[in-house]
Length: 472
Image (cartoon, rainbow, N blue to C red; front, side):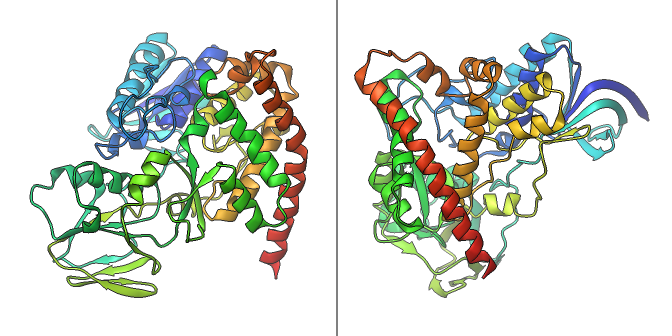
């Protein structure tokens, strides 16, 4: 059994990237759209997220441009106290389903095919019925490039003995008996969430062993609050970032200055981070995590056996009575095998990160550019890729690309106005509407203007040093 359809845009994936792209395309064009996704409901990997997951940046600039996700609340308790609400996984899934039902489908211009596998060349198959559909389209939007591995579905790159208790952090709420201890494997945001969950639920910090192959530079959530009350913190952090980079004498000195000005944080003052995945935390979370003293830095795990854990640089003891919590799914493993391509190539659009830390805004921007610009070279200039970071020094090309993109957007009047009205931007509207008679705010803006070019020059210098080092 087969079927044939015709559409303007065939969008593969209804995660945040696909949803943000379609939302802006609906607003900016009169196009018809077909969305195909393997999950039963929109939301992408959020459908498989662990039950206690939340956003790690404010809800106010996540999701789609046309519909607010944030409740507009300031958290009054907990480790996010004093800052904007962080949507839970359940809230995010409900939000995307509402957008799909009441905006996309209600428009009459979107057709949605969940529980379908896309095979390429406009062909997809319904999982439940086996029905095959062929789509003739004008443009294909591959919104799956930024799909990430999640703990519940990824395969660890180490062996696990049958006797070992091993689980993704998704299963932590199902634990019913106290184990001999918990071993958390991973150094990224997922492992941070696992440790905070255990501590929040009364597990003694001394009963947690945390295997961190690499420590990470972290971002301070206080610097991501897009409200007037946080202007000096959020926009001020941008000024401090430029000043720290522009005055740095070396790459190591740059990171030290970024830490001293409060732009970057780390868990252990005595350990130099070698990873940067842009995980965002509050300072209260840092204090809580520092209660855990059993930190293992002996490289990546290669095997979990019944009575020992083997690592690249040694081994530690364990028992079958310990619970080993897998948080080893990583951006490196998700994207490492994917070769980035320009966003616009012929009749294929591949939304990718064009502003660091913000996949939703990046996808929305790509859709706006698709709708309003005809020349492919110009489209790709406005949507120049911002490389995803993994190692600490990846902060350098990432930040440089982001600054250049921001400058290019600022030179286009229509694009600048659109950014100002797009709630996913976060800060453009905040800056545009600031009180020009407020001395503190105008001083911050002058610091940004004075600091950006020296920062660009220094980032270019450091990028050249990294390239020279790689060639040697």
